[in-house]
Amino acid sequence: MLILFLACAVLFTALAIWRLERALSLLLLCLPLYLWRISLFGIPLTMLEAFILIVAGVWLWREKPQKWLIKKQKGRKRYPFDIEIALVMILAFVAAGVAGFNNSALGVFKAYFFEPILLFVVVFNVFGPKKNYFGIVWPLVLSGLVVSLLALYQAIFNFSFLNPIFGVGDFPRAVSFYGYPNAVGLYVAPLVPLAGALVFKYWTQKKYELAGLAGVSGLAMIGATVVAKSEGALIGLVLAAVVSLGMMGYKKIVVGLLLMTVLMIMAIVPLRDYALEKVQLRDLSGEIRKQQWRETGKMLSGGYWLLGSGLSNYTKAVAPWHQAGIFFNFEKDPDFRRKIVIFDNSYKQAHWQPVEIYMYPHNIFLNFWVEVGFLGMLLFTWIIGKYLTLTSALIKMAGADNLWAVALMGAMVVIVVHGLVDVPYFKNDLSVMFWVLIAMVGIGEIGNVKFLISNVKLK
Image (cartoon, rainbow, N blue to C red; front, side, top):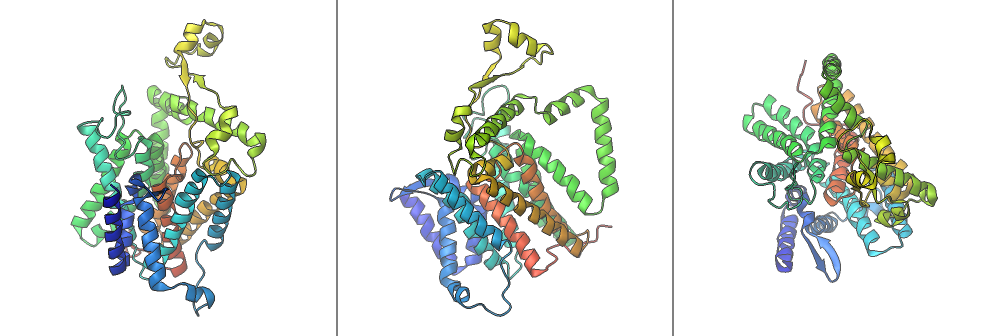
């Protein structure tokens, strides 16, 4: 495996030297390759990390950016999000120090902050001057298609294929290449709006084969999210669609659909009960999430509110406040709360649900808070807000028909909505995707471009 790993790295280096842009596109196609891990001279390394370091090294060697770092060139503009990036690196390094600069903390700093931001710089410089969004978007969409096809194969033919745990039981869930099902939704759902933009782009150009490929990719990613039973991602997709239609000028349609949905939910009792259960987080996963958040709140108020627990240190820091399990009303008995107090131990044991200590609190804001501190949480909230503000400005600049800017906004809406109950950043592929999306918005903002589809008239 080590020889094969090194051989792939050498071939990728050759490709980067020959065609850096193509190597960068291949990297974006292969984001799930972070799952291929080795130890090189005692240092853990993934194939994704190797690819990032190679393209960054080749870019530095070819472009020699130290020249314009020393002497400012005429007409050169500042990097978008430059101050925010500098602050992220500082706060992440401080967070590694809070955790004691141990191997785990330094590994998180390297994989989730330094390398994704390094790739942000390379993507911005390689694709930005040419406005080559296709070199970014198609690889991401096709990588989502590959992940989705495996998930659909598991659901149709064999849930246990690469899935020994979630493939058994009453409610099997597809996991594709990953070790848990929500990873599927976390990765592919934000790519669905990008696939949708490609469909409109090629359909208007009468390039039906490419439009069909993009459409199949989008549908496959939605299907994979369904078979993975990633409810947070599905809700994110629905809200992203609502926001996108509204930003494209279809406000009356949005209002009509929302009104019909509300009336349907109110009229159909089982649907209303299901909606209330999900919104109020009364199902098992929701109750576990609420218990996590309560424990995290106690931890933060117990001396960690400013600096957090440090990188990769949450499980240790929250342990004193962790409750081994919760009582859960499996039968939906309306008298459950009284019975759990007065009934015997056998009843309590039958309704006891053990709860492990998870790596993160499963909420996008709490995740950043415990990892990079209160200021880090505020900073990432600012970055997301600035991203959404810039995409909104780009949509208005190009008109309501700018589907590409709408797609970028939709991708972030999916990330944030799903992130309210999950971990949409602290994973190798997800952190890279986050900063690639930031780079794409930065390219549009700094170049004052109208993106891909400014000539499409929707009304």
